[in-house]
Image (tube, rainbow, N blue to C red):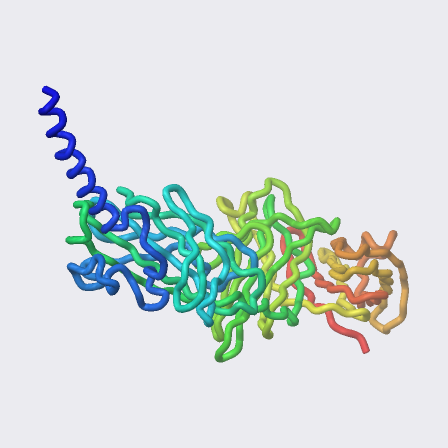
Length: 415
């Protein structure tokens, strides 16, 4: 019995050593440095797993890289996937700048480690498996460099699809390379115009039409909505492609293209305010106000009117027609940072001032009202103009109502 036990020990010990040597040979505890392909070297080209040509019958991919550019200090969750049926999988990935030095930093996921080692003469990080795993995906984080001047970052990854037979034979290596530039500076949105009145909810809906009239180039556009009291107006829109927007809108328009955006009129009661449209190149916009017999999605259209986009000014005017059954309304918005002292002068057809009133419109606010609400005891049948002068630029729009019907009355500037 003793002799039998003694004889068995070398037998099992030999098996253990052979298996352990095979595991070491197969790099089951992770590859050595510089096997991601960052210098062109992989476990295939180094003569380890080279039974098959590199990238034979499968692929390795990287998901989660910021396609539009990386932002300094931003952390991005990444996932490496190996597309090849196998018993076990491993990988190694690096990130370097144009000089081959470390770019950003990795944070390992479960079953992984971040190792430092030489590659092309530089000590860089390698995120990689610790032990081969049954899953063909590896998830971890990459944090971008602190400064954009690092420039384009090159990501190299090598994936290993193995049969886990204790030796490097019968395994396959796959590689890929991706480059991501630093995010470019945001374009200066220097072209600004307004829709001084937005109505959404209840029986009302607003449609905006935007176009980039240029023959080439792309317009980067933002649209912000503000309530009458200066707080953000939470309004939802759906564009002509079926894309939904809630709150502020960001979009791009290639040269010659256009977009229609229709408010969803979700609130049961109407909410009003104004819209600010900013673009890095000149664009054209119009708005259409629509009134329905009930909720816009399920009822009949009663009336609508289109208005062009408006700029701001300190001396403007609108036409006024108060002959029955018409009533004139004006909406004015102060998109600036300073309160506006606004003076309204009502003129007759001969240009004579018959009424004057003054109001203060706080910075970032809006107001809409009928002309008869500006001037108490206004005689019926008045025809003329309403001059609007202000201490800071404001934007105005006007509508003429006849019961539930209405049409736009464009404002004009004064000399």
